[in-house]
Length: 536
Image (cartoon, rainbow, N blue to C red):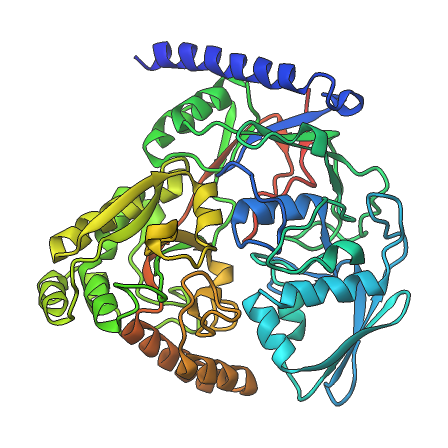
């Protein structure tokens, strides 16, 4: 049976590849399949290509191809120079960044400090860590063509960690004319200074995205380490091929029709692990947190009593068993800020981790005033790591007494639709599910979902909670690890009581690639396509 499916899927993949080439003829002939080419199936189709507009990881991955950062994070969690070096004044109030030589935009113009100031402001308008940094910032300006000066109102220890954060949203640098685009509107073109150039003429959402080596890029001299160090491109071209069906993608990987598959389905691991031509590894050793997020603007989840009833109905084991189903790769964890970290605590998570809250959920819902308003749950079917959560949650909500409208869609539609503040009856939503890499949720400032800013600057769902915002300010003002741990626990307690979001467990995700690829990097924001070479 397996061999039959493999031959059929290989034929399908070959036809797909031929159709992709046929669609591309005449669009970008100067860069078509020249030299070494890596073909990859990523975790999602790419549609939104502005890495500041959305927190979607596929857009972040696109960002790392095209753009660069002022500073970056290495494998020891230390911030390192990337586009710029820095100095800090003795009073800790002034940070001076100096751009290194040889930086050019893809259109040939030099990178300037004005470009970078505009980029930082656009990023900080919508990123949680960026917003908090700006709360402490007195001014940020270009003092000459290569110098960015950031002055604080008071000392703030997360300046470099914010600007150098490895994952979504990343403080990517772009030309001033693009960075001046309001953060709630997408930039009109993809011009970065990063190691690859985006081939706009070959971009076909739902089919493929293409990148070619930026021959003008000057890498740093240090070895590559996570998102820091030398971004040395060793191939000529990278193609992200869309294959929504995981069986087809696995067969294409085994047959050599593609080189790299970001997310291997757990149920097919025994098959791919037996293939000696493949390397199977978990590139992100810190894993992911999966979660459910409600819309606070409209019934029924504008009522905290109804949110609590929904929370009590959830349990992590059911979700993880459906999502992963392999004890090696899943972990029940009630910590908002990731288990086995300094800020880990189980406070408030008892029913979630024990799966013991259904009776209490039914009682809470009956007493909440819930009037039977259908809960619109978005259910993407094209991303392996997002299929199970809405289906399991819908079942648990129905068991608790909710009416559920489970709407099948794809992930990029979710990414677009979750930004809408329209009522559910007008194309809005009540609940969606997503995943964060551990690095993105490991503290209250990095964790974008934990914010309480409401409609003004808040993450999708627009939770409003002044207490959480006050506690976050207290967190960044203390340098005591013990005090930070206490404050983080208080934030978690409030987040569970108000149901800011529902952590549904942690998991690891294996990737697979042909052994013809070498130099694949690990880290919390993988895959990264520099440093990878391909043998013929």
